[in-house]
Image: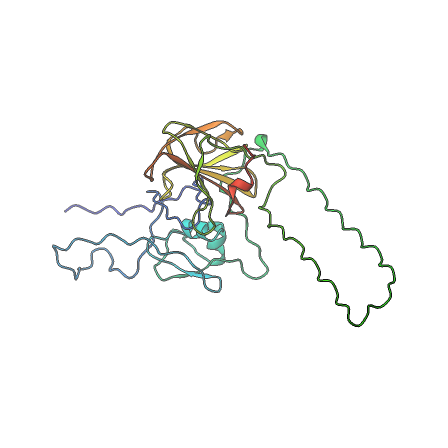
Length: 303
């Protein structure tokens, strides 16, 4: 009789960055540990389905939303993808929810996805430390001078009873600026035209057109914290960490020319434009500030 060999537990690589990376995406990495679905019978139990019926493919997880700071685990979720979706560090989630084995989650399980009262969450920018020799230049923000007090009004005689006060002119409103970091200079990552603009809630970055093989350049100095195709919808993807607050992402590449842990310089060629996970050659480019996508056109140098 042949004895079955128990399958060893798969170990998740700490160097894998999915912080980015990118909210609302489900990882396809074969090295991620699956969620334990307690709604299905254990292995070896008799099945109630007909022997000829084909197993239906698992449905992708619905949009992740939290109620009162908690989230209900869905089929296809992992602790990494949940942490990315809510801009948290997976290690914080494991601590807040007292998970002895973060690789084992159950469908329907409730997880806290915001810090407990009195505790602040760490910024999600990756699990690989930036090379100290490639430290990003930083400078303190210039202090904003206080406005001068208005001059005292000269005394005037009281207006006549029939006079009406002049209407006050409405001050023009200034749009709220995008977050910036005084130590970062952002370069265009490709030479083509913008064919897909940033749209909050619909498009997390911009699409830059071009031809297959066109160079894709690093938008700033930093370290490659992800290089692969494990995020659905992004194709061959590169993620660069620029500082504790900023990362950039480059998707749909035909070929990736850098590897995880590599230090890159602003303007360095990191990939070739392609159309992986899309229908036409283009570069999907994102800049994220503390995990939240920002309008890249307001940060890139004018051209």
